Image 1: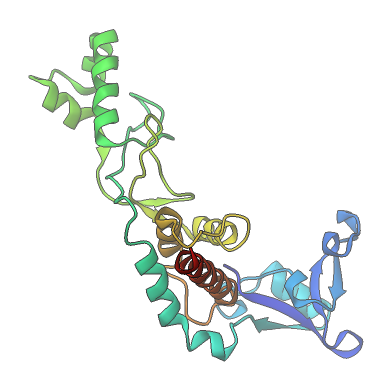
Image 2 (image 1 turned 180 degrees about the vertical axis):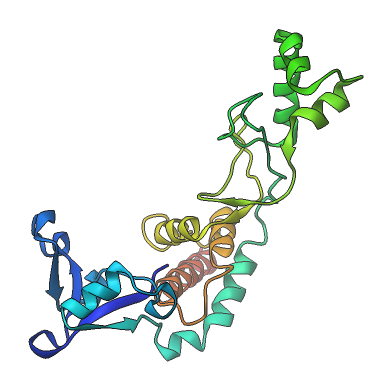
Length: 242
């Protein structure tokens, strides 16, 4: 997540630079100064990104970069939130190893569990054994065919949580920064996990692996955790009364 915004000086003191669309203006209006920080455009850390369009824009508009951080009361509770999320995810199914093909034998954009990958090799070999031999050479048995054609079995980065394209089984892998951002956006808004939904808590647990303790999104995550706690307490109270 890009965690910097451009804050104004002079007549724009206390305002933040945002995209025109955030003020209801047509896109060609470019950028506008807005009083709401949450509507500000996000930028990379200027200390590490060097001379960029963003740094030139800030200089041109007499603005300066500010890093977004979570309030101290939130950062002090991050460990407790992480623990709650991990414990709530404890009942989730463990993901299976992810496998794929190099593109010459089958589309490179699909992921598979091992069982479905082997089944696909069997089907394509039976349909056209000559083509298989052209690609991989002669194999003495099915195990050699699997070893020759199937790639993967180790974790790589994905832009979204990987699932088997044949059976839908959850697969293992890391999330890119983009993938983690998208998951966090969903799991702290319209797809927030219910207190007893271990699979969604596992997804959230996976998305926060590399989230720093001062990231401003911990405010939203904290709200999700507290809402789940309240829902759990409410159900327990109903059981006692019932």
